[in-house]
Length: 109
Image (cartoon, rainbow, N blue to C red; front, side):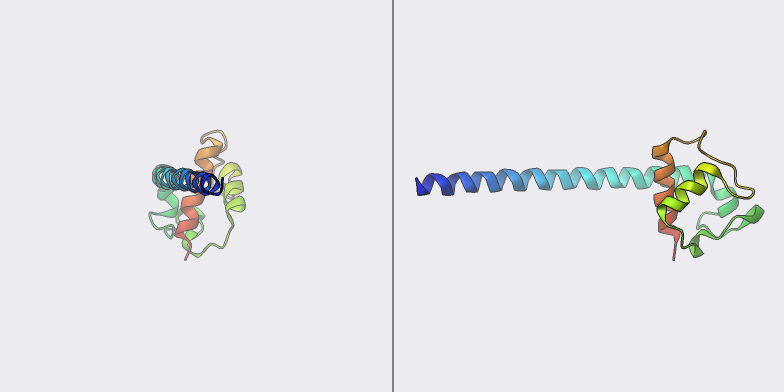
């Protein structure tokens, strides 16, 4: 009976470990895809004013490298625009807005 419990615990631990490790690989792949997509969206819609590094400042665009905005505030500004910045809510999906917000966070120093 004791051996049976130890064997069961070992199989359970092994199964749990293999599921967690494969989930982490999927998560890393998903994060990599999200980052790549965020960069692509940023390059397409944002670089004209903000520049590749976020510090261009054309047309009154804020220096994103000096920004301290949180993700929810970035999302709000991307959705609804601010100043000369157009609102992207009807142009980008909610997922794309999240991806570009995540990318712009990476530009902050």
